[in-house]
Amino acid sequence: MERSLSMELVRVTEAAGVAAARWMGRGLKNEADDAATTAMRLVFDTIPMQGVVVIGEGEMDEAPMLYIGEELGMGNGPLVDVAVDPLEGTNIVASGGWNALAVLAIADQGNLLHAPDMYMNKIAVGPEAVGKIDIDASVTDNLLAVATAKNKDIEDVVATVLSRDRHLEIIEEIRAAGARIKLISDGDVAGAINTAFDGTGVDILFGHGGAPEGVISAVALKCLGGEIQGRLVPSNEAEIDRCNRMGIDLKKVLYMDDLVKGDDAIFAATGVTDGELLRGVRFKGSYSETHSVVMRSKSGTVRFVEGRHSMKKKPHLVMQN
Image 1 (spheres, helix red, strand yellow):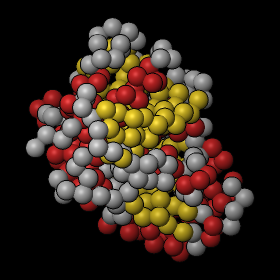
Image 2 (image 1 turned 180 degrees about the vertical axis):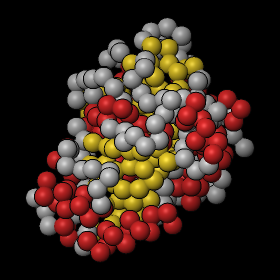
Image 3 (image 1 turned 180 degrees about the horizontal axis):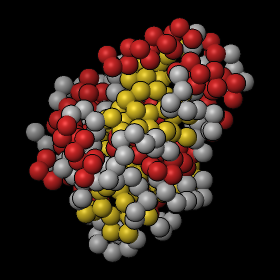
């Protein structure tokens, strides 16, 4: 992949982030998602790459989502796999909450996990705890392993978990072990990435979330030197059948190299609402301000990008009623 793609991809997440942020707090999550998707598509069409969505939120008959198998880019340039979530945290934007992102990840063709949109059980940590976690071990054992790796008492470890009924046993075990919890309403990409930045105060992520978000998180953590493990969790017979047709072993633990192969991948995200790592979009009248991060695994480079965008010259960034 060309180095210049890193900044080109930031333009994609910036456009999606600004478009989605127009809907913050309006209680209209689908409209926010549609706005982000439309803006993302428009900017993807200007990027010199030959991309295919290999894991995303939709299928071809579920427009306007970016569907699995959709081709993105100008049709020239490097051949890449794309994992994308135009708006990670639709409910967050609808309610004006914390940590909504526009996110995407790319890698050389054939290097990202190709799987249906379904649940994935995940565990993620930052660089200090790499090699110390095991998705098949107990929650308590993983907390103790992270505490030891980070030279902390278990009472000082913070676990992030999506606030869902399906996670009640995980939450109870974390509390019984003496660790602390940051419950999040949505947005486990942010939860996974935050484990790799000391300033966020998060040490480990547990629980079931979306498979696309798992792949996107894996790219980010590969760039940051962290680790994620996962296992696909079908919700019905249709999802089991799809996995069988795709040759996916549902019992298999998916490690970093299963989720993202090779040594070259790029992750980009723009804050839609405020979070621990990124600020949300600010509207200043004739222009907007964005805060983004872009990372490349091959170089290990992490860039934080502040953008200022004219709202008059980019009509796709303006909310359409």
